[in-house]
Image (cartoon, rainbow, N blue to C red; front, side, top):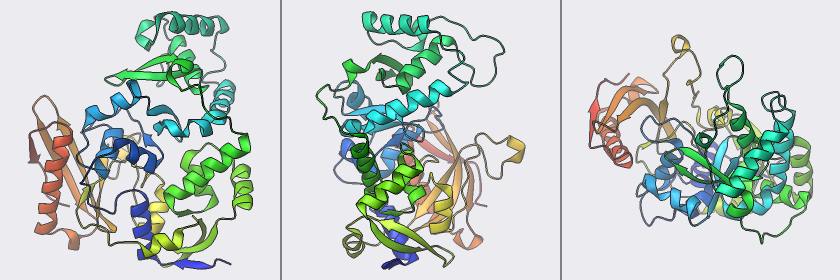
Amino acid sequence: MAHLRIDNPTARALWLTSHGLAQTPTGPLDVLKMIEHLGFVQLDTIQVVSRAHHHILWSRNQNYREPMLDPMLRHKRQVFEHYTHDASVLPMSFLPMWQRQFRRKKAEVGRSNWFGKHLDPDLIAEVTRRVREEGPLSTQAFDTKVKGDKAMWARPPHKMVLDYLWYAGELATSHREGFTKFYDLAERVFPQDLPELSDEAQIDGLCTAALERIGFGTLPEIRKFWEACEVAEVKAWAERAQPIEVEVQGADGSWTQALACPDIEARINALKTPTTRLRILNPFDPAIRDRPRIARLFGFDYTVEMFVPAAKRKWGYYVYPLLEGNRFVGRIEAKGDRKTGVLTLSRYWTENQRLNTPKREAKLEAELQRFAKLAGLERVEWATEAV
């Protein structure tokens, strides 16, 4: 039986505070501290206004600008790239806990038809040799071609080898040019004086770090944070760590049993009312990527429809949720054109008609103006009325 009950308004405030979204996104900027606080920042190729990783950081502090991330990877080596639930940027301080994840991903991709049936040992040796001798290389430095039908996601053999070695932690992202990844030997990117942790210590570290960053969650939600541990491993960690048992109220009044970090009561006592500033969140924001949990806590039904056929989409290709205070009040579809310097709002929905007010539109206009600055855009145009 859970010892502590967390009502829904408190749970929402805890969730937003844990994800850096409760406070006004201003003040002194420390990008590394933001990434450490979040644990990871998802990378994504799609640039509708600004790519996901830039948008996520900007959402926490709107003094952030796109060029700030690259030096942390390229020169300072404060962060590294690898795979959590998806390709992500992680703090370099987490690397000791990531060694088994390299092994896990190497074994996983080695069993995958996507990789395993096509990997040529001679090509692996050749790619490794060239990177060792020539320094960081991108896929453009190689000229092998896709074999067979050019289906979606089909990749030439050299790209599969580069990806395989990257998953395995034998190559690492040295830097990016635009969004093109350059691969180098991991030993030339990662510090070589890392402490060696046992697998159990790495699991404990990852699970503890996950719970610290979400505040509370079920065992599946803790596992899902990194997707770097198995179900049984997370369960064994919980038996060792004995996190605080809680019950959390959902938006519909129902209660869910969960686990919470040791300082959960202190966090509750320190809570402040979330800012009422309207916020445009990225579809890949870590605060909302677990759609069932957001629906349970906030009563907000949100789905990414990029890979849904256009005719079957309910909302649109790339739709941004709107957060105001401790609730999601709407969503927008917007696009930035860097050639013309225009951010165009193409569609705007409120969660119900009662939320469609001039005051909220004014808040949205102000946030769009701020969002435009992130992408270096000069003006905002509305091509829609609220729905």
